[in-house]
Length: 310
Image (cartoon, rainbow, N blue to C red; front, top):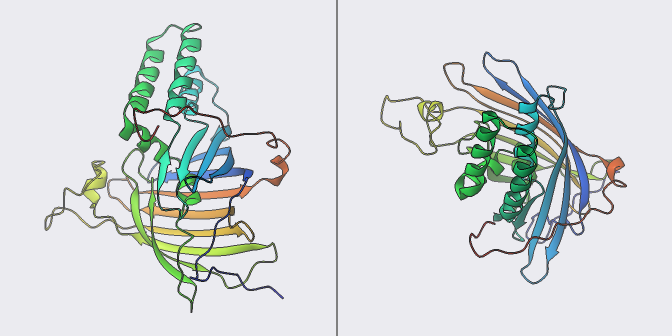
């Protein structure tokens, strides 16, 4: 007989990613009305360690083996675009104990890696296209807001840091939460109101199942999203229609650590002029990679006094 899920005394799910080391296989399918779908596959190594003094957790994410529409980047332009994006990894994010606040700590490392990549690339190629790529990359890393916006584009991270460790209704194991998802590229993530439910028993695979359903509750209207606005502008009567969209997700959490084991999710935003978008995401813990990452460590980064988020 399946055992009932254990909650904390305040009926929350407790998280304990102590010495976490795992790799996820991730597939994301993006769709836009009237265009061919884009499928991205990659692996993401995740490490975690606790700072006993500050009571915070430091997570490190390292991306590898990326395929776009079933192929690796192969042209010079594709390789350069990938490598400029790859300098953001390993990505380090500090999280408070209650999962409520996150601070990106690795911008200085990204800058060091971009400098090395630029020097290596310019020693081989001399092209105006190269100038454009590095100009845009430096523009992103030198601006705190643009850098954070670039980090936010990783859809998987939105779900990895989902508000699952909340206080749930004791009768039905239900909680009302919010999710912000980067469904519109390089636009402020879209806000979804969600209702999530913890299923009462552990599964036969020793996981905890959390089901999430939601819909858009963002203050921005259709015209606001069509213009890529971060804040509501077309909000007057008759100016634009309220934005609609759905979200559904199913999380499987490790029964002991409550860390994500697997995830399936899909979401949408309905927009006119063939600008509507949707996604489907699948992520699974790849236990066969454990031997590969057994010696992986958190990369030490020297603290800087320039910016709080570096």
